Image (tube, rainbow, N blue to C red; front, side, top):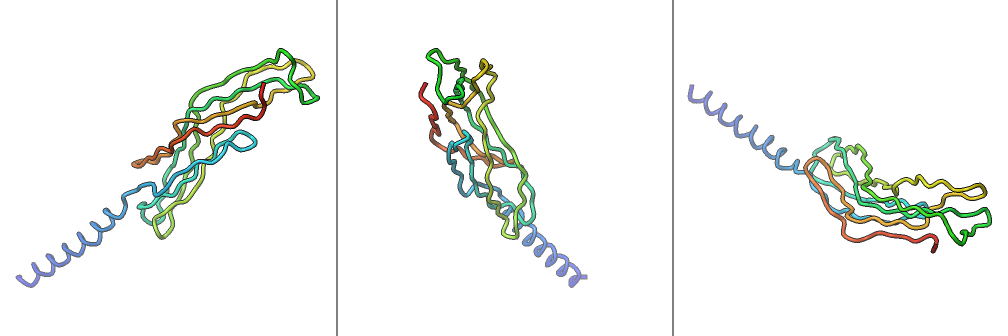
Length: 160
């Protein structure tokens, strides 16, 4: 009877050590996060690396920001009329994706944020172009982890 209790106690200690260690190891966090751009099309790339997920764990990562875009009407000659039509579009933007960790419990990925859409209507012989874009309050998050990316990311394509 005493031997049986000893074996049960030993098994209990082993189970706590194995599963307790796994629970501690699975503490998701961002190792790094950065943003680059805006690109020539006005998008911002949000790059990240997460750790502490455990092996083969799928997590949804979301990138978000406040964005402002200025759109204008450009003629077929590449010029802007002396009284150009312009529109500013502002608001929150976001992108999400599902990422699965490898054997090391880590995920490295990238999400792309696009500028707010335009509703500008240009007259015949002109087309809508993105004149400028800016992103602020950029962040990346997952279920139990998040990280802000400091800075303002902006680009001017045309001075109007």
